[in-house]
Image (cartoon, rainbow, N blue to C red):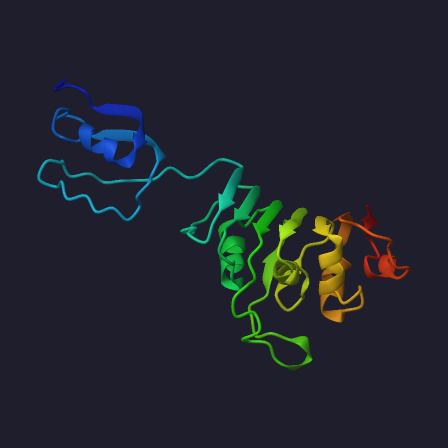
Length: 224
């Protein structure tokens, strides 16, 4: 098919390489092409087809969806100001810097789910005396719900230690009871106390009998 009078085209394609078939000269008057690409399987693929392709300026639409699921360590970054809910999943460990990038890329994040059973690497490399760490403290100013029910206990430390994370007030937390007990040293650890005091609801999985001082550790939370 060849056409000499088509100026603007809106189309959806399965793969990024399918765009090449639209830019082979058959639309010789085309000046604006809007493309929705459903899959980019090989983001590092180099395509040398410049002899057959017209000169193009490529722009990307802003991501306007409100959710973004299964983000991995390969997340390229960017600013997603419309996204309110995300999930993080990988079979490789998440580093502190990854969570810092997430907080910056999703400035209005409200709901966060973390799924990772792998132990964090180098988690003790920057720990100093008095349980302190030389890390940038990560802020989630709009976070209202945090799901840590499917994580290694290192990620409970990541979010509850005030040397790593500063939670907002009134967070609804879903978390494993036994791992929380371990991380908070039977709900006595000072470095996790301030973030626990900001919680409005705590839903424990694998719950056992609660110690009497548990409520003092979560003074403003309804414990379920």
